[in-house]
Image (cartoon, rainbow, N blue to C red; front, side, top):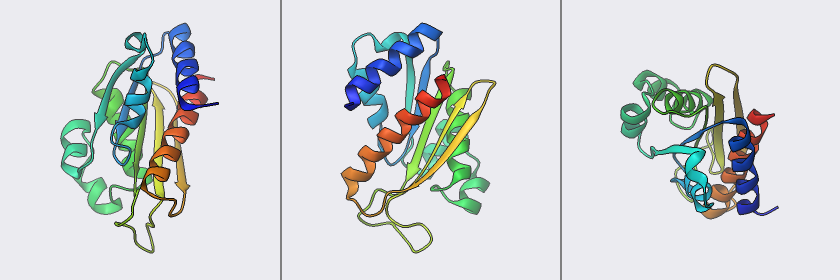
Length: 160
């Protein structure tokens, strides 16, 4: 199924259950928000999107702790969780998904290679899912597109 069909189906499910979505994106630069808002009628489901590319934006817009960033880094489970929780707290959404990773081609290390992406998806007053993916060096656009797919997976999983 292509991205737009998946996004439309996700929006329909959210609409039927009264769920609103927020996104907190770093390495994808707002691609999930853009995909969801491509669909006509998305305004009744999509609340807002935070593009927090820099650490300062993560801190200022989402309330990610500077201590979390200094101890674990921006590309970490802890940061992804903090981003998702911040998006819930700063929005009117029921569900928030976050994405933080290294799309490349530069920026990777032995510990955190290009293609490493952390995701979190949290439901207001409910469960939080985390997922780590190591897509490998599949190209910047490849990492970003694969990340959008995982974000959709997590949003769908939180609706079940």
